[in-house]
Image (tube, rainbow, N blue to C red; front, side, top):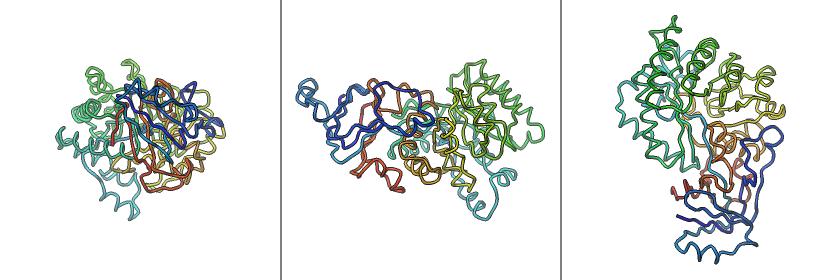
Length: 418
């Protein structure tokens, strides 16, 4: 199948020589082509250029059955890449949201059996079919807002069978959804009640029982640990990451959401692909990240929903770091997978320029999923995952005009999603 998009007002995030990610002052730069065309063929980006050097007849003669889309007044850009979600879950948790309104903290709700433990209890009861169907609806929802690739974590099982159930559902989603999906095994998401006070035994279970079966069944691309105060310690995290290395599973760490936990330094030490959350990031953490291959990933939705301090994105970028921003879509602390909102949050709450925000939600999140060679920018040979916006005045309008869906058309793998 071939698609020609012509008369594009602005073609955003184009690359002649693709990068793996952008960092520091580079994040302020974004290559744009005004009055452009883009040609997609067999699921890939074939060619693009300016309209004044475009011969439509030549392409039409070669591809008489191609679809032609007139994008006059519209922006075209790569689809968003959401590198941190928990969108496979058994039920919403709006009652806990009321508890938050009344003043209970995330930690207080967790201590009394709510939060992750609440979802884990329901995970045992739900069928795989129900879990798959509800997750597929959420995938379709986020795709309609412009997300073309998503990482999904387990972690609401906390038993071997429930964790495997979640990962089997994610595998099925990969087979049935047009989105590009990566799976992360997060058995170390919380400490079950029966292991409180002896969490090293739960870590043993993750390492000796869960990990071998996940690896044997090839159910996960990455390995994750919630390394934070009240959850898993640096020692726990190191044990799990070392065990994962034996199976070729690279880490992606929940780090420093609740306090300075050592999670960022641990992630860097073990060459984690990303460290995520990062509300508590100081000079030592920034120094550890500089020069590493670990992508600092901020999750604005969780900080916003929980009323937490915001990660120091501006300080991190000015120090020379790259920044990625993902949704953390989950039922407890960030019940939204709308990456357009994350784009707006980047500018509104974290004082990032529109160019920085777009880089943070496309090419840098693609890197945080190990996908920046095929997604995250408009470059020849990359996967044909693109967004066509509605008619808008400029690309700066994307983060500015928050709260509405500005995506009119989504193309995934070279085919219209909507």
